Amino acid sequence: MTEATPATESPSEPPRPPSVFDLTVTDLRAGDPLQWLRLGWADFVRCPRIGLFYGLCFFLMGHALLAVFRAAPAYVLALSAGFLLMGPFLCLGLYDVSRALQNGQRPSLRASLLAWRPTQGSMAIFAGVLLILEMLWGRASLVVFAVTFNTMPSTTNLLAQLINPENLSFLITYTVVGGFFAALIFVTSVISIPMIMDRRVDAISAGLTSIRACLQNPGVMLQWGALITLLVGLAMLPLFAGLFVIGPVVGHATWHAYQGTVSDPA
Image (spheres, rainbow, N blue to C red):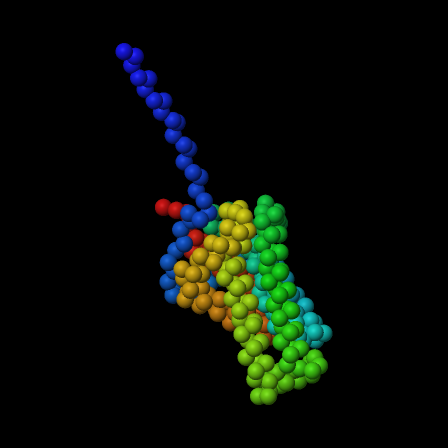
């Protein structure tokens, strides 16, 4: 009687490489945003010359925004968000400095200026997505102005015109529309750009991880966004001079926010 041939064992499949969705998103605490700012300040103090260079860039962006306000007031609030939108990309160099300090390396301005090159494809895609959101915001702003005013208000006494009680419906509508787009942009990008630079992931994975972090920690992320808005707003008041320091400190702090929010799977 013929013996049965034993079945050949199939070779075991190689383990699946870890996905970006396997990353652990930390449960943040209410005091974490202030800790990120303290760490950002410490990085700025350790490399003040590099920080002041980027602070100058923020200062010049502020005056460019002022020029837009004088020429096209309808765009100013949306472009103010664009200012905050471009900030994280300008902060790429600051993220590189913070990463070097964290790894015990010596940062350099040249290296920080070239930090975008290894991930230029993903950065370009992510910038394109945010640019589309910014354009939609700008168009929505114009629609709100067009519906409220017969003609575009002049820049003379513009603030007095906008806060006139007769224009209360305009203020409410503009705030709701602006708040929606601001929240969408913030949730998508709060940790995405430093994550793309550090882990070299694709833009979609970084954006989804950022959204996941905000959904898991809505209160802390809301606090972080409000804190950034408050600091940048205060820095703009003395003719944007505060951006020389606040800009780079917030940039360094954003790196630490990313580091404190996302970690490798256990």
